[in-house]
Every structure is written in structure tokens, then in C-alpha cells.
Image: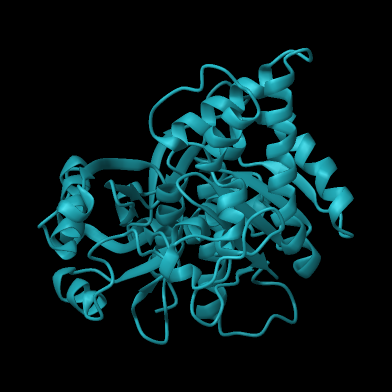
Length: 405
């Protein structure tokens, strides 16, 4: 606790630490009484009362209802004030931009999707961003000025040395050297940008399968194949922001591709990306391969193969071959990083459920010396957008909940 003996700091700083502890407890547990907050924080009843009065006066907590159904008088309950601040997130792909606004408790209060017709679009990127954001802000009944912070998730990564987007040539309009300056001029709130797969990892660490884990790899397979690396509790982005761009990774089983960033192709992407699954299915004699976007086709094929009976040899071979291909690239990652956990995410992986996960786990144990545990990602609905919101909310809470200022 903030007030334990030996903890350095002034009374003001100690009060702020206790305030933050109480606010985090309210976020985690929901409405709590003064007595319950005192027990959870180790503070006396008078100190807990002073803390709650201080937070209520600052507009950070609200009195909300009373306890019922217990012996004795009903106790007043307190909760974090949802309107204390709002944050926004964007998930950008060549086809569309999804935007959402969340209140400080994490509840999504506004959502908007803006179709973006790719290379045929004449709409500048900055306008696309502001239009998508404004749609979500309007749906939340707010204005741009109400948004404390924005996080934008994109494929590839903005190189911190140049400010330019790299590893995402398929995202038209986002490679201008002045884009970040133009966004800063157009947006009234602070904003950050992050790789989309990194944001999925943040969502899984905050809400999903990687909770309480400080060393893990997240493998994402949907529109593209990529990875996020969390080492010592921190995202590892690399010198140019390109850590985890494993789609370019040379692997056995595919031709060696040179100048991969110009060709926008690479060994592991060709071997195990979602676009490889329909071709592999036809090659192995699977009948009735569906038509449509390759991500949807791949997910449907993998799901069907995972549910196929043992005597359905084409589908069983498809699943086994796909698992081997996935494990081939993962073997390089875990051999270098030796993570505690590998999270499989994206429809190209989760659609196979536990059947595919177990096959990849078994193959990986044959191909690599480290033996990390493989799990399926828990955050399935808009994971990039959820990660963007969680990232924006983390910084927002640090700033808004700081009562030492």
C-alpha cells in the first residue's frame, strides 16, 4: 500500500497513490462501499472516507446506489465516473476504417465504420481519419473536444526515425512524409499510432489470454500474417518499428524471395498466410472450396477441417499440413525469444479451435527446443480496435487519475 512504512514521498504524493489504487479497484471490481475500499487498500475508515470525498469533489467518482440484502444498514456504493474522460481508437485497413469511443471505464459508447475504397479513393487520409473519428464521436453524443486521446492502429509501422509508414505498401495514401504533421494539425487531441498486431497483443494482455504474462508472442493470421513481441512486460517494436513483421521471414518450403518489401511477399506469408489455405486445400483434394475474400474462405476451410471426421482424409491432411506450416515459422520465433506463452489470434488461427492449436503445439515441440504453451486468443470482436482503445485509455487514466498535480 502507498502508506506503508519505508515508502518515500510527501503526504500529497502518498494521497495520490492511494487515490490511484482506489480508482483502479473501482475499475476492476465495479461499485464498492467505503468499507470494502478500506479493506482492499488497507486504509482506515476515516482515511477511506476522506479519499472518496476527495475523488468525488474532483469528479472522478460518483455515489451510485446502496448495498442491499445484507444485515445492517445499507452502505453507499461508489463507482468511477464514466464521464470523467473519453478516449478513441481507430483500426485502419485498405478497405475501411473502424472508429470507436470509450468512456474512462472502458465501455464503448460510440462506434462508426467508414468504407475506404483503396487506391481508387480521392479522399485524403487526414479527412478519412477525421471523418471516421467524427462518426464515432457523434454516435457517442460527444464532440471532438471531449476526446482526451486517440490511438490509430495500422498495418506496418511508422518508423520512429523518419515518421514514415513502413511494411504496409498495400495501404494507399498513408506513406506521405508529412502525414503525421498533417494529422497533428487536424486533430485537437494528442494521438499515437501503433502497429495493428501490437494492439491485438495489448488487448490480449489487458483483457484476454495473456493476462498476467510479461513474456509472450502473439501470432496473428488474418489479412496478413504478423507477430507481436512482449518482452519483460513491454512491447518490442524494433529500431524501425518492424519487429514482428514475420510475413517476410524466409522459411523452408517456399522460394527465397529477395527485395521482399518491394514485392510485398515473403516466405512465411506465402507458406502459412490465410491466402495460402484455399490453394493448399485444392492441392490436397478438398472439394467444394468456397469462393469469396480469402480471409473468409481460409477461416471457413480451417473450421470445416477441424470438425471433419477422421475418415475425411483431404480435410485432415489440410489441417495437419497447415499446422506444420504455422509451426515452421513459429519455431524460428520461439528459438530466438524463448517466450513463456504463444497466443494464436486472427480468424486464420482461431477458427480451427483447440484441434488446430493442439496440432501446432505438437509440431512446434518437434521443431524447436523451447516449449512455450500455445493458447487461443480470447479477444475475438474487433481486437485491433479494442487494443487501440485500451492503449488510449491507459494513458488517459494515468493523466486524469493523477491527483498529485
